[in-house]
Image (tube, rainbow, N blue to C red):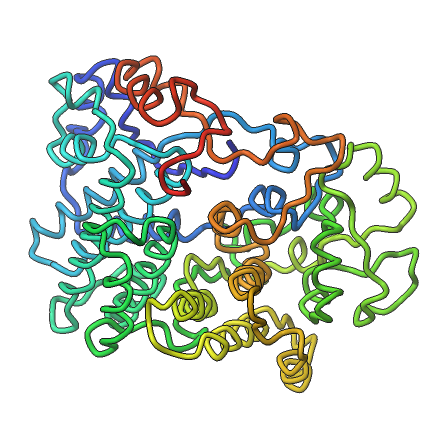
Length: 493
């Protein structure tokens, strides 16, 4: 599938055909076999923090593609890919950090590895984890258990991730050897700790359906972080977001800068337009353009209309041809810097705190956290000051914005969904899968997969070729032997 962008060449599955070939690839006699971890950190950060993906916006009913039938939009996807290569790079950085005694790199590597592992398990369910990590760490693929790693239960994967995240947060030190090559926080360890703790809250909330599972300790872990800000600091503003900035320099420009498709083929989804219009949300003015047929200005809600993500392509191209559809804002194609790629941000933290307060995991005012999240999102998205500070105040003051009894989770997650437009990867889709909010429209005749929204991706075909026994066992134990996009993984049962 298109959303996974693997940029490294060291792929674990290459070892499956020949361990000698893999080892020869790892050890080049003409190149050094060791490197300072700072030389690895920059490229790993570029990969991990590059989370902007239009396919996620199509699947989340925020955008519609009009050049052809897109499988993300019409829910026709099938297989995904594993993140072995990216994980391998984090393990290598951790090993090099241990070799040269630069401990902070080790714990940043643990966090980045946890990020990739969570991404894998969110897509598939059970994944190779403990044996995979042993194999990569040892760089030894000479025995069958290394070449064909067993799959871990999703429960065990999450337990391992949560423990690694805690170790990383507890162990980072501002007094250790400074780190270099850091294009995210320029070596500021206190901000890395905030990112790790904030991300841990995301992971814990993704497990909300498993809050009664004793050994995970979800509510207690969440409360431990929030109740001890000195030990577990969280983001305090947008300025601390874990994000990759863009520059008007070749190779460092916004991911869709000068993209011909972004200039002509992407339009707002009608359900997304309806949502923003209903809320009188000024972010509509920075997400899209008014329709040409309306003749109205960019700050008039009546000037916007969308296409129907579930409708056949011909319907959408016809409506587009009449000038009755709002194109995505021009900045996404014409601004080389536009906005940064946010792996994890302050607004999301506030929404997580709001939901946790509502669920009784922590003490605090859910409505106050929720409104802070909205305000942070409005400030982040206010491209070239399209709307004023007064507009933000007025938006928050609307009676319909405040949390209402019986709809708290829906409102919190919906505002989070809006805040993640064209950012934060597939998180809005995963959050919709977890909560059911907002409702993703599937009524049109264009929808594949029997008119249903997929719950996961099928395992990579390479796994069936190289690790067939273990992948078959994982499919049997989770999905009754059927590797299907509609299988419901443990996480959301």
